[in-house]
Amino acid sequence: MAKTKVIAFYLPQFYPTKENDEWWEPGFTEWTNVAKAKPLFKGHYQPRIPQELSFYDLRVPDVREKQAELARQAGIDGFCYWHYWFGNGRRLLSEVFEEVVASQKPDFPFCLCWANHSWYQKTWEPDKPNKLLMEQTYPGVEDYAAHFNAMLPAFKDQRYMRSEDGRLIFGIFEPIETPQLNEFMAVWNKLAKENGLVGFEFFALVKGSKQLAKFKQSEFKYDRIVYDGIKDSFKIVRKNLSYEIKRLFKKIFRRPYKLTDYKDYADIAYEKFKDNPDLTPCIDPMFDHSPRSGRKAIILHNNNPKQWGELCKKVKELVDARDPKDQYIFIKSWNEWGEGNYMEPDRKFGRAYINEAGKAFLSTNQAHQGD
Image 1 (cartoon, one colour):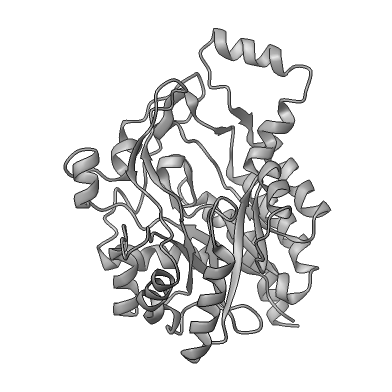
Image 2 (cartoon, one colour; image 1 turned 90 degrees about the vertical axis):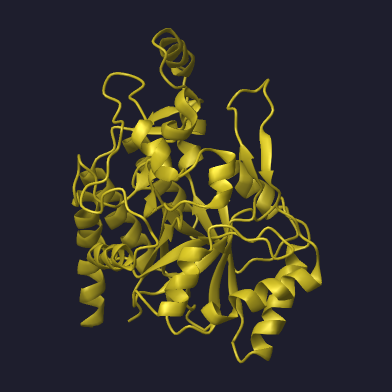
């Protein structure tokens, strides 16, 4: 019997780069925002401080080994590294993943998701324009081929995660607002076969029901829809009669507008996955964007490990009943500390999120292996 695969998105940041030195300040990393975060209202959990891995530097191999060890304890089968290619060979935050491939360590499966979006210095104010830092471009076929060849060592790596029929799993962060993606996918499938590979299983990362509706009307032909429904909880809450009262309350007491209870998110997400078996679940252990955006943040409030574990268990039961080719769960994310969206141990919860995920994912998977 096939086993459901659990894949966690992984941010290969947390080390200084010359671009961040220029754009922000010397030595800037994601930890800069994390450490200076402050609570915005009573009961708001900030700052979120890492525990046993501390404020790590991902260039240190031992850190990456410990991350893989913790991920195994959580029942995670592999990391999906965010991958940045801006066109014409321009890459950012590639050092860590290149070292993972070159060193063959950690011995832990992985795949890639192309974070194909421009980078901005955001003001979070509607009347103040954002500053473009790095533009995402799509130069054409020659660049698609250069992109493929740059990543070929990773694609040939035995750790690279594959679908049930042997295709390489590769995600697209912006699946709609992107020109020529069908051509891009065709070029990559052709080059894969020329290099002795089966081809690619391309997944679209779709974020919320509004984007899903647009996606289904688009011309793009993906193999899988990985659905993150965090935005749905805010949309549905806004339909309630009490929403305007809550909004007024938040304004008076200076609380963020995009604030909802984690239980509401978990219930809404589960129903979405139950009613739409064509969607591959992407679930969030927690979310709090305020270290980056202050009161403009999206915040899942009152998150706790037990609710997270229950969501993992229920979604796992749904996915276990699907065809083996569709037995995937994505987690967003393993280590997005700047978005308050992580599973790694922190000072408040320790390993509780890892332990609860392990209870849900490891017990049933081990039972399947004994069938």
